[in-house]
Image (cartoon, rainbow, N blue to C red):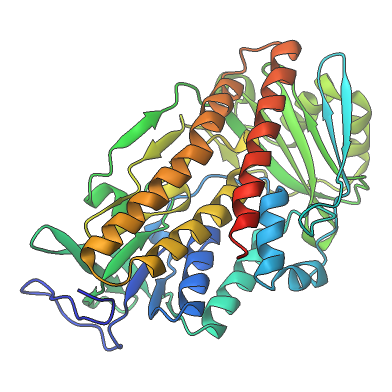
Length: 395
């Protein structure tokens, strides 16, 4: 069956009054919006259902590593991110107990700075690009389940904002709806890898805090980070075991920062604090099966790693491109699609598994500064491999 063929809905479904799409993307944050944009640019009729009530998301430091910046530039979106007041980051400072390492961003693959766009900048930019490419976006539907035909997923069921039950059929359903993905749940996407550790995180946005790049502080039971983001704000986070972090908040964040970087804590006290400091209680990471008959997963729906790694957003954009290319490569028939999605999963796993184990170890907070330095080197090596893969996609 080709992408243009119409899947059949099961008896009792109610058709939604729109043209039947080739692909339905459930979830409209970074991974979902990027997937929809790339698919639509490739000529795939795409429906993006963007309703946060169907999703669950982990916190993000907003930091983009080189791979993510490379992709935004290639997609023609980086200029709008910069124009929205997202500052360029030319260096990253990593602090351990007795050592401080400063790494300057060297121009490579067309990237001469890192960025950390706030979700209210990156999200709309990706959604606008998806719509401009021809994707249809519906934010009035809450997905409640999937449509199945002969053991193959052929669409989604949902409820509109006015209470009507609807169903939309498509060749492929992509779950980009976060860790608690409805798509992953309904297809029983079993984990191929499970983490053992979970750290809690409290974070907020400070104003009036002048920084020269990213700052990450690693101490057992007291990690923290400073990430300049859009609009003159700095995302400051503290990560620790749940019992140490308690209810989080400005005072707890400042106390944890003070343990590893007293001078940064003093500057934090002089800056304008946030009114809200969300608390993330943490959960162990996982890598789920990424595809099956008529479905695929991307972003946190398929692979979740502790946000302390600061790699989640880069991974979301990476996997969105890998998946979109697989969908277009496999558009001839079901067999071609399944083969292409299998390649997507194997590539995602080869880029993620080693780093997954490193990040799980970091989330334990059971290391010393010597081990942490070694773990950071392993992360850097994994990022270099990832950059080569992403750069090769340009052709």
